[in-house]
Picture 1 (tube, rainbow, N blue to C red):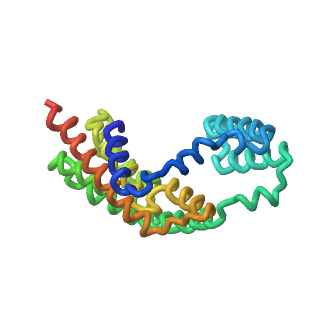
Picture 2 (picture 1 turned 90 degrees about the horizontal axis):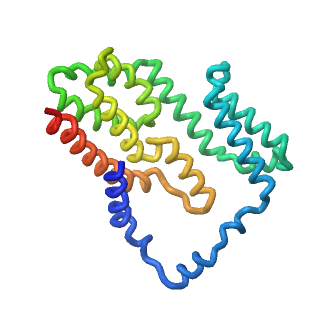
Picture 3 (picture 1 turned 30 degrees about the vertical axis):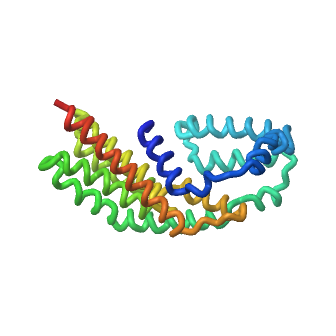
Length: 247
Protein backbone atom coordinates (compact mmCIF):
# COMPACT_ATOMS: atom_id res chain seq x y z
CA UNK A 1 0.00 0.00 0.00
CA UNK A 2 2.88 2.38 0.76
CA UNK A 3 4.41 1.68 -2.65
CA UNK A 4 1.07 2.27 -4.36
CA UNK A 5 0.67 5.51 -2.43
CA UNK A 6 4.02 6.74 -3.74
CA UNK A 7 3.00 5.74 -7.27
CA UNK A 8 -0.33 7.56 -6.91
CA UNK A 9 1.34 10.75 -5.68
CA UNK A 10 3.76 10.64 -8.60
CA UNK A 11 0.91 10.14 -11.06
CA UNK A 12 -1.03 13.03 -9.55
CA UNK A 13 1.96 15.34 -9.93
CA UNK A 14 2.12 14.34 -13.60
CA UNK A 15 -1.60 14.18 -14.47
CA UNK A 16 -2.57 17.34 -12.58
CA UNK A 17 0.58 19.40 -13.01
CA UNK A 18 -1.40 22.61 -13.49
CA UNK A 19 -3.15 22.14 -10.14
CA UNK A 20 0.19 22.27 -8.33
CA UNK A 21 1.02 25.71 -9.69
CA UNK A 22 0.22 28.52 -7.33
CA UNK A 23 1.10 32.08 -6.47
CA UNK A 24 1.71 34.10 -3.33
CA UNK A 25 -1.82 35.49 -3.20
CA UNK A 26 -3.42 32.04 -3.21
CA UNK A 27 -1.00 30.80 -0.58
CA UNK A 28 -1.77 33.77 1.65
CA UNK A 29 -5.53 33.30 1.18
CA UNK A 30 -5.31 29.61 2.17
CA UNK A 31 -3.12 30.31 5.20
CA UNK A 32 -5.60 32.96 6.34
CA UNK A 33 -8.43 30.41 6.51
CA UNK A 34 -9.68 29.52 9.98
CA UNK A 35 -11.20 26.03 10.17
CA UNK A 36 -13.26 27.04 13.21
CA UNK A 37 -15.26 29.41 11.04
CA UNK A 38 -16.64 26.43 9.13
CA UNK A 39 -18.44 25.21 12.27
CA UNK A 40 -21.64 27.25 12.40
CA UNK A 41 -23.34 25.26 15.17
CA UNK A 42 -21.12 23.53 17.76
CA UNK A 43 -24.09 21.98 19.52
CA UNK A 44 -25.24 20.36 16.29
CA UNK A 45 -21.70 19.11 15.68
CA UNK A 46 -21.59 17.37 19.08
CA UNK A 47 -25.06 15.88 18.59
CA UNK A 48 -24.14 14.62 15.12
CA UNK A 49 -20.92 13.00 16.35
CA UNK A 50 -22.77 11.23 19.18
CA UNK A 51 -25.43 9.88 16.83
CA UNK A 52 -22.75 8.87 14.33
CA UNK A 53 -20.95 6.94 17.06
CA UNK A 54 -24.17 5.17 18.02
CA UNK A 55 -24.86 4.27 14.40
CA UNK A 56 -21.36 2.81 13.96
CA UNK A 57 -21.81 0.69 17.09
CA UNK A 58 -25.24 -0.41 15.85
CA UNK A 59 -23.74 -1.41 12.50
CA UNK A 60 -21.40 -3.78 14.35
CA UNK A 61 -23.94 -5.17 16.83
CA UNK A 62 -27.13 -4.85 14.79
CA UNK A 63 -26.57 -7.93 12.64
CA UNK A 64 -26.61 -10.22 15.64
CA UNK A 65 -29.83 -8.59 16.82
CA UNK A 66 -31.47 -9.05 13.42
CA UNK A 67 -31.33 -5.42 12.22
CA UNK A 68 -30.25 -4.73 8.65
CA UNK A 69 -27.74 -1.88 8.06
CA UNK A 70 -30.42 0.04 6.15
CA UNK A 71 -32.71 -0.01 9.20
CA UNK A 72 -29.87 1.14 11.45
CA UNK A 73 -29.07 4.02 9.09
CA UNK A 74 -32.69 5.15 8.93
CA UNK A 75 -33.04 4.96 12.72
CA UNK A 76 -29.88 7.04 13.10
CA UNK A 77 -31.19 9.66 10.68
CA UNK A 78 -34.51 9.77 12.48
CA UNK A 79 -32.81 10.10 15.86
CA UNK A 80 -30.66 12.97 14.64
CA UNK A 81 -33.69 14.83 13.30
CA UNK A 82 -35.52 14.22 16.59
CA UNK A 83 -32.77 15.46 18.93
CA UNK A 84 -31.67 18.47 16.88
CA UNK A 85 -33.33 21.63 15.72
CA UNK A 86 -32.81 20.72 12.07
CA UNK A 87 -36.10 20.48 10.18
CA UNK A 88 -36.88 17.57 7.91
CA UNK A 89 -37.27 19.94 4.96
CA UNK A 90 -33.78 21.41 5.34
CA UNK A 91 -32.26 17.96 5.83
CA UNK A 92 -33.88 16.63 2.66
CA UNK A 93 -32.51 19.57 0.68
CA UNK A 94 -28.96 18.36 1.36
CA UNK A 95 -29.60 14.78 0.21
CA UNK A 96 -27.73 13.79 -2.97
CA UNK A 97 -30.86 12.69 -4.82
CA UNK A 98 -29.12 12.29 -8.18
CA UNK A 99 -26.47 10.10 -6.59
CA UNK A 100 -29.07 7.96 -4.82
CA UNK A 101 -31.06 7.57 -8.05
CA UNK A 102 -27.89 6.51 -9.85
CA UNK A 103 -27.14 3.89 -7.18
CA UNK A 104 -30.68 2.54 -7.45
CA UNK A 105 -30.28 2.07 -11.18
CA UNK A 106 -26.76 0.63 -10.80
CA UNK A 107 -27.74 -1.99 -8.26
CA UNK A 108 -30.88 -2.91 -10.18
CA UNK A 109 -28.70 -3.53 -13.23
CA UNK A 110 -26.08 -5.48 -11.27
CA UNK A 111 -28.81 -7.43 -9.48
CA UNK A 112 -30.17 -8.43 -12.88
CA UNK A 113 -26.72 -9.64 -13.95
CA UNK A 114 -26.33 -11.63 -10.73
CA UNK A 115 -29.77 -13.26 -10.97
CA UNK A 116 -29.21 -14.04 -14.64
CA UNK A 117 -25.97 -15.82 -13.73
CA UNK A 118 -23.74 -13.58 -15.85
CA UNK A 119 -21.25 -12.77 -13.08
CA UNK A 120 -21.20 -16.38 -11.90
CA UNK A 121 -20.49 -17.54 -15.44
CA UNK A 122 -17.62 -15.07 -15.80
CA UNK A 123 -16.22 -16.04 -12.42
CA UNK A 124 -16.51 -19.75 -13.12
CA UNK A 125 -14.98 -19.35 -16.57
CA UNK A 126 -11.67 -17.99 -15.32
CA UNK A 127 -11.49 -20.64 -12.59
CA UNK A 128 -11.07 -23.44 -15.11
CA UNK A 129 -7.30 -23.22 -15.38
CA UNK A 130 -6.42 -22.32 -11.79
CA UNK A 131 -4.45 -25.54 -11.28
CA UNK A 132 -2.92 -25.68 -14.77
CA UNK A 133 -0.97 -22.41 -14.53
CA UNK A 134 -1.12 -20.73 -11.09
CA UNK A 135 0.91 -17.69 -12.15
CA UNK A 136 -1.25 -17.03 -15.20
CA UNK A 137 -4.42 -17.56 -13.21
CA UNK A 138 -3.23 -15.10 -10.56
CA UNK A 139 -2.62 -12.51 -13.28
CA UNK A 140 -6.01 -13.14 -14.88
CA UNK A 141 -7.72 -12.90 -11.50
CA UNK A 142 -5.92 -9.64 -10.68
CA UNK A 143 -6.46 -7.91 -14.01
CA UNK A 144 -9.86 -9.49 -14.65
CA UNK A 145 -11.08 -8.25 -11.28
CA UNK A 146 -9.76 -4.79 -12.12
CA UNK A 147 -11.49 -4.73 -15.50
CA UNK A 148 -14.85 -6.04 -14.34
CA UNK A 149 -14.86 -3.87 -11.20
CA UNK A 150 -14.59 -0.80 -13.40
CA UNK A 151 -17.65 -1.95 -15.36
CA UNK A 152 -20.09 -3.36 -12.80
CA UNK A 153 -18.83 -1.80 -9.52
CA UNK A 154 -16.36 -3.65 -7.34
CA UNK A 155 -18.76 -4.61 -4.51
CA UNK A 156 -21.12 -6.90 -6.48
CA UNK A 157 -18.18 -8.35 -8.41
CA UNK A 158 -16.37 -9.36 -5.24
CA UNK A 159 -19.61 -10.78 -3.84
CA UNK A 160 -19.93 -13.00 -6.93
CA UNK A 161 -16.25 -13.96 -7.13
CA UNK A 162 -15.53 -14.69 -3.45
CA UNK A 163 -17.23 -18.12 -3.41
CA UNK A 164 -15.28 -19.13 -6.52
CA UNK A 165 -11.96 -18.15 -4.93
CA UNK A 166 -12.96 -19.92 -1.71
CA UNK A 167 -13.67 -23.14 -3.66
CA UNK A 168 -10.30 -22.93 -5.43
CA UNK A 169 -8.41 -22.34 -2.20
CA UNK A 170 -10.13 -25.17 -0.38
CA UNK A 171 -10.32 -26.07 3.28
CA UNK A 172 -6.54 -26.00 3.80
CA UNK A 173 -6.45 -22.26 3.09
CA UNK A 174 -3.81 -22.40 0.35
CA UNK A 175 -2.94 -20.59 -1.84
CA UNK A 176 -3.82 -17.46 0.12
CA UNK A 177 -2.36 -15.12 -2.50
CA UNK A 178 -5.51 -15.53 -4.59
CA UNK A 179 -7.41 -13.50 -1.98
CA UNK A 180 -4.82 -10.74 -2.40
CA UNK A 181 -5.18 -10.90 -6.18
CA UNK A 182 -8.95 -10.52 -5.87
CA UNK A 183 -8.74 -7.73 -3.29
CA UNK A 184 -6.09 -5.73 -5.14
CA UNK A 185 -7.77 -6.16 -8.52
CA UNK A 186 -11.23 -5.15 -7.32
CA UNK A 187 -10.03 -2.23 -5.18
CA UNK A 188 -7.65 -0.74 -7.72
CA UNK A 189 -9.88 -1.48 -10.70
CA UNK A 190 -12.64 0.50 -9.02
CA UNK A 191 -10.55 3.60 -9.66
CA UNK A 192 -10.81 3.17 -13.43
CA UNK A 193 -14.30 4.57 -14.00
CA UNK A 194 -16.80 6.78 -12.25
CA UNK A 195 -19.07 3.81 -11.52
CA UNK A 196 -16.24 1.48 -10.45
CA UNK A 197 -16.66 2.31 -6.76
CA UNK A 198 -19.39 3.90 -4.68
CA UNK A 199 -16.99 6.52 -3.35
CA UNK A 200 -16.38 7.78 -6.89
CA UNK A 201 -20.08 8.47 -7.45
CA UNK A 202 -20.47 10.17 -4.08
CA UNK A 203 -17.51 12.49 -4.66
CA UNK A 204 -18.77 13.29 -8.17
CA UNK A 205 -22.12 14.28 -6.70
CA UNK A 206 -20.48 16.54 -4.12
CA UNK A 207 -18.31 18.11 -6.83
CA UNK A 208 -21.34 18.80 -9.02
CA UNK A 209 -23.19 20.43 -6.13
CA UNK A 210 -20.13 22.61 -5.47
CA UNK A 211 -20.10 23.88 -9.05
CA UNK A 212 -17.27 21.67 -10.35
CA UNK A 213 -18.96 18.76 -12.15
CA UNK A 214 -16.89 15.72 -13.16
CA UNK A 215 -18.12 13.91 -16.25
CA UNK A 216 -17.84 10.15 -16.71
CA UNK A 217 -15.21 10.41 -19.44
CA UNK A 218 -13.27 13.10 -17.62
CA UNK A 219 -12.95 10.79 -14.63
CA UNK A 220 -12.20 7.75 -16.79
CA UNK A 221 -9.45 9.54 -18.72
CA UNK A 222 -7.42 9.82 -15.53
CA UNK A 223 -8.83 6.80 -13.71
CA UNK A 224 -7.71 4.33 -16.37
CA UNK A 225 -4.12 5.53 -16.08
CA UNK A 226 -4.15 5.29 -12.29
CA UNK A 227 -5.80 1.86 -12.31
CA UNK A 228 -3.45 0.45 -14.96
CA UNK A 229 -0.31 1.75 -13.23
CA UNK A 230 -1.30 0.49 -9.78
CA UNK A 231 -2.41 -2.88 -11.15
CA UNK A 232 0.93 -3.21 -12.94
CA UNK A 233 2.80 -2.52 -9.69
CA UNK A 234 0.59 -5.04 -7.90
CA UNK A 235 1.32 -7.64 -10.58
CA UNK A 236 5.04 -7.21 -9.97
CA UNK A 237 4.52 -7.49 -6.23
CA UNK A 238 2.42 -10.64 -6.55
CA UNK A 239 5.00 -12.31 -8.79
CA UNK A 240 7.91 -11.32 -6.57
CA UNK A 241 6.28 -12.15 -3.24
CA UNK A 242 4.42 -15.36 -4.06
CA UNK A 243 6.34 -16.89 -6.97
CA UNK A 244 9.91 -15.61 -7.36
CA UNK A 245 10.67 -15.64 -3.62
CA UNK A 246 8.25 -18.39 -2.65
CA UNK A 247 10.90 -21.11 -2.76
